[in-house]
Image 1 (cartoon, rainbow, N blue to C red):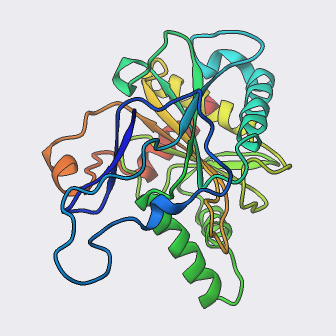
Image 2 (cartoon, one colour):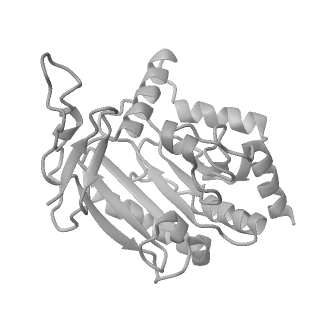
Length: 280
């Protein structure tokens, strides 16, 4: 039996126990978003709050056409097919509050299997980090009379050019302005779309090109964590993207204790080296 516990100091949720792959979440179930006893009300709250049993489900998605050691080995076409399968499985969980698809490659990234695979988490609540992004997209949308935050950010990145890594007709890969780690990559669709699981370009060629450059610069593909950010429930304005975080340096006490990331390689320098790898 799994519990969803709420930290009484931060209000952040922690899932205790393994996610259950055999008990799908009921569509539209989002009550766990609002069960923090310190978020409102009066009087002495319950310090050790426990959400209802079951904090979501998880399923494993293997690459197609078969197991490989890394997404890079699939080639652009194989990655396109695999990402299409990601999309198909995310659609199967329509109605949950949050769908979070990850790929973890290498022991340092927490990989649970020797071959490359994805894991799809279907959560009945919107985690704090996603809720904050949802708020920022909405605030920007309202402030600018309907514009999209990530679309405008990408336009500015293209205008500047110094953090671009791969540009093609479907998507653009960049080293983001506030990169949390050396050589962090972000894949953004050329045309904004709120949900990855909806029809439209996947950006597989750009993602594969970014992986090739990363491997060339570092001598091999490092352990990494990849996740697909798609619109959570309640999003008025949003745009999907894919983040890739190489595990080239472990987080230290500053990062773990404060949430402030320390990145010794500027995203501008990282992007320049990755672009140079393509020309070599």
